[in-house]
Amino acid sequence: MMKQYGIDSRLVIWIQRNTGHDLQTFSDLAKIKCLDSKKRNYSSAKKIDDVRLPSWLVVKDDDFSLIGEMTKLKQLSLHDVAIDDYSFLNRCRNLSTLDLQDTNFSDCRLLATLPALKKVLLPAYSQLKHTEVLEQLPCRIEIKEEETEEPKETEQPCAKTKHSAGHQTSCGPLQLGDTAHLSIDGMGIILFSAEVMKSVVPGSNFLTDEFTNPKQVGAHIRKGDITAFCTGTSGDFALWFRSGYPDSNAEKEFPVMIRLALEVRGGSLQFCDLFWLSDWNTDFPQDQILSLPDGFYHITVCTRRPESGYWGDDQIICLYFNRLEEMPELTWRGVPYLFTEEQEAETQETDIQGQDRMDYLEMIRRLYAVEELQGYTEEEITIVKKYFDPLPQAVEEFWRRAARTDAIHHVQDQWIKPVDFDKWNWLRNSDYLILLNENQGCCRAGIRRKDLTKADPPVYVTVDDQKWTLCAGTVSVFLKAVLAYEAVFAFPFQGEDFIYWLTEEELETVQSGLEKQPFGLHGWLEMDMSFYSNASDNMAVIMDCGDLEVLYGASSKEGYAKLMEVMEGIGEAL
Image (cartoon, one colour):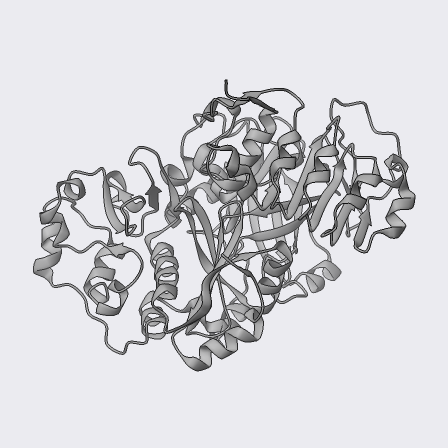
């Protein structure tokens, strides 16, 4: 009889979100290198009922022992959880980073069994036992500040943590004066009042149905039922909530500023990542709810470039709320960008940073080292129009101007050509206009038929032709990201082992040494991809599939040498 192992349902979901797939064999546990209980993956399971458990697993409350079978685990971060037995840590001998600050962990003797430990985050000192062990640990130790008042009794630990702004977050809804920390995968932050938006059907894709086209976004923002601003990048943000309007000192400290407005009903508003809108959910986290009296509010959003120089790198965003008698008149016709014209101009002036504004035509020339681009003829494009009409403007433009360029077809995956639609039934009979097919056909990306009338529609991805998830918010973003990803496979100058494992610390080195590009891919091969470079002809692709992987290269010797100023010695060969 096959041995069965118990597992807490929360651990099942954490594994699914971190790896992007369900556990199948016991040996899969040993492949996991990073486990973060707060990891968000929008294509992953939301609850235990959505996960298919293998026969050797049975749900057992409060059983986290299988973490000990993750023998290659390097980073473990647990949040807001109470575990009776942490002895599984004894078997996690490769752990280099351990975050237990928001747990009930207490016995420091377990830490002495972790020889690779470089950084550990622990709960308040008063909660810890055998603290004499800490003096012997050759690693960086961060201990949570003590409570200033007794926390209320809860089923799970939920302490207040001091942040750099001197304010606090807690278990309940936030108040004006508090600070929230929000990590986003999309490139925008959304605010709305649940009561105002109660007509939205739970589980619906509000992002693509109502909030993708800039005109749609502008209409909602002027109406004030839901509002948003573009951060220009994914990343980590500290949101400071304040009342009234910013004074002159605040304006000097945070000079990048826009003005929005919103109606609040039900005494609160919610804030979230842009991608959250793709699966509307009424069960909102308490730490993403702000208490506000009902009414209309001017919202002044202001920020500054982080000290690191990289947007989204623990970036502070101040949101000032001033109550009004009625909804003010706004002039936004599209997406509000949290940038100034001066900063955009500054970005365009430099060759390297100018890649932020580089269109995909210039990307092809530089990343693929070609001078002349070739497009398809009107006759060839007409083939597709027999089956998909109208064609989105962004797709037709790409096909006319560049899609026939020979260099972009000598890559890892297959760009779909117009003539392919006459060859293959699966292409012309699909509910999606397929743009890219993975080299073994196990993943493909395309545009929904009902979105073909949009000029620059969203792109979706599937691995089974049944479930499609959002891959990129527009065709334009998709093209840039895919062209960058595929170019790495064709680069004449590449890493010796091509693909490498990354630790969180090494990721920080990449993020601080290279510039993050304003595009990404979500869900391609069930991975989230972000892109970094420090010259217009080099690229590093960070692939998050639970583990962190990187591949990189350049089209020129000079571009590769510049890239290696940061990437030299980084990563473990896959």
